[in-house]
Image (tube, rainbow, N blue to C red; front, top):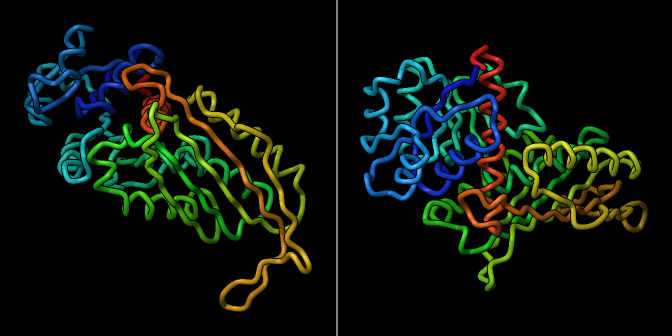
Amino acid sequence: MTTKVAIIGSGNIGSDLMLKIQRYSSELEVGMLVGIDPDSDGLARARALGVPTTHAGIDGLVQSDGFDDIAVFFDATSAKAHARHDAVARETGRPIVDLTPAALGPGVVPVANLDAHLDAPNVNMVTCGGQATIPIVWAVAQVAPVRYGEIIASISSRSAGPGTRANIDEFTVTTANGIEAIGGAAKGKAIIILNPAEPPLIMRDTVHAFFEGDDTEAVEASIRSTVEAVQAYVPGYRMVQRPVFEACFGDAAIRQPDGTVWQGTRVSVFLEVEGNGDYLPPYAGNLDIMTAAALRVGERIAAARGDA
């Protein structure tokens, strides 16, 4: 038996998520794609696939004949709109998976902390950079204390729509918070780069983590295991080379502005994320990793609730 879900938002992300559920999930079924523009390409695509639609927003969803069969919401709209969608979800007893920057619920990166939040009424998918890089910081933290984690996410400017561009500050803050709260680093920092190259380049990420001790073999093994776990739900996720380690002991120790001295090891990991090309182009791996991760979260939430 499949669990019926509603996707709120018929733009690029909502449409890509719809196709991923249609093509790859044996647990979920799109019970409705919700939009506000009757002429949107996403709604037209859904109708062609036989997926029920409404262009009356969440009110149209709640008032539809099939609403009672909907068990889970996905929100692929905006942070501003999400506040109301969250309220409706809570009023009607549906968990909601939030792909916006609203962050009203706990941040979730499937490989790291999904099991801790399966019963939450609202879970947030953090950011695309967070989904790509927090697993690496988390992997290091499973082996040794991480004092500092820094990520640089480079995405094609073509894959950065108005919402991404308007929320750059939120991206850096939310991702940095996730590096700490989910990744386990004592301090986190995030940087995003919009790459204007033509033809567009796929998402590339660099992760730097400073950890205590020098057990590089254990850290590399943990990183490799985690990358494989992410690849189970994001096939285009990969390391481009082995992790690079730098010993920071003695004269090579890192002196902080406050005068403290850090001794340990710095590891740098270089990643690429290529999209599946379901609705979005393959270079838009930054968007693809969000929908792929959200699909995994939705499946696990449905299973935990006994809906699937």
